[in-house]
Length: 493
Image 1 (cartoon, one colour):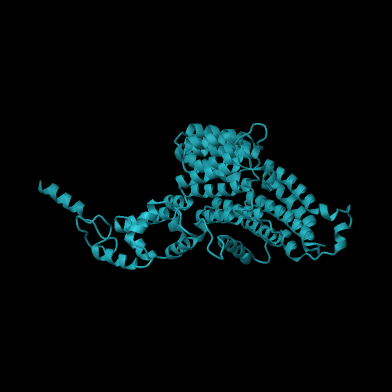
Image 2 (cartoon, helix red, strand yellow):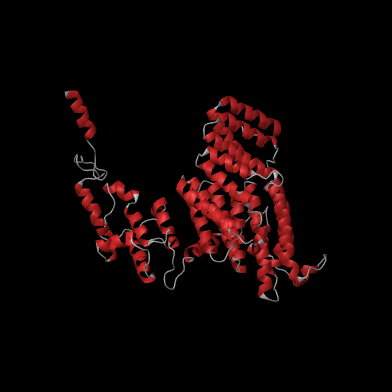
């Protein structure tokens, strides 16, 4: 009896997270009374909080509801407050900050959402709410300020000499001086009005090759085309600004594909620099949709490099830049990048909500308003993003379901088939079925997809490592299949 009482007494001792002193038995918080008073003293004015504080599913949902009272409630019940104080911030504290009483806070939280812009702006400024998460603009300001600043910072940070001496395409953009007669020297004359269309047509053809074979094959062709045919046009003096914007916009599309091909080939720094240079051209041409697209490209890359917070910010900046200008198809593309980043961060509710929003945008698209470069983003692409997200969240059943939806037996290129088979295999493996996962991976390997895709190689090696840890025998079988189909592959030892 005494021993039991001793153990109970010992287990009941809890320590203050602030000063380490023993907590009273009836204290349900994580801090002692003195530390709690100190913390509350610091809450006499609203704290300045990092944007990450506002990235909980509850706060995201509150902002999306366009209801300031729900934002107050989610703010008060934030996990950080619950951890520090053992309970939510009370309505009286929020009211003191805002200059209203507790009853008024309660009415705002539980009543209709009609509040005038001036009052909303006052509340947001007092609580230091992130402007990019709001559903209105401050008087005389725009929520686009933040993402546009992101673009400007990217451009300012880009070095003058983007690529080393071995790859001069971007150097050419910055330094090529062109005489007008160059346009027609040793070639068939191209009408000025057809220049942009010709660039876009060639880029489209090369993009088809990229989807089929991977960036390693296409990059050299694309780089030479850009250097020899496109870059010289960027320093020419055009008869009117409209024509110049068209050519610059088309060149940005070519550069962004060059960025993708470098990214796919594993040249990450080069890819980022191509994307940024394309961003500069799209800004000069006034192509808002392409600016959003390029920010989402950078988000995709950051996610691949496991820089998930950066990926999420870039995806949201992309949406804020393009909102109100880009078509629903483009917006669906940008929102799907937010979903991918949320899945990588383990935010299942946030992922589900973003994917639902992307699907809704895509379902309500008007194809006639879409830029040509977005034509590839179809139902299969939406399903592919969902499959990637469910894989990263460890939902094996959904990962495989959406990976299968993402495949079109007639039109899906071999490389994409390989990607999606491996996504499904990884999802199934995360769900605990190593044998089925190995079978799916074997299907992917048997396609004989070119290894001139660093992303595909990473998918293979990541899966191989996870499978071997789960089942060494199955891992050995996959190793044999890889050696059979890719004898030059040295990544598995």
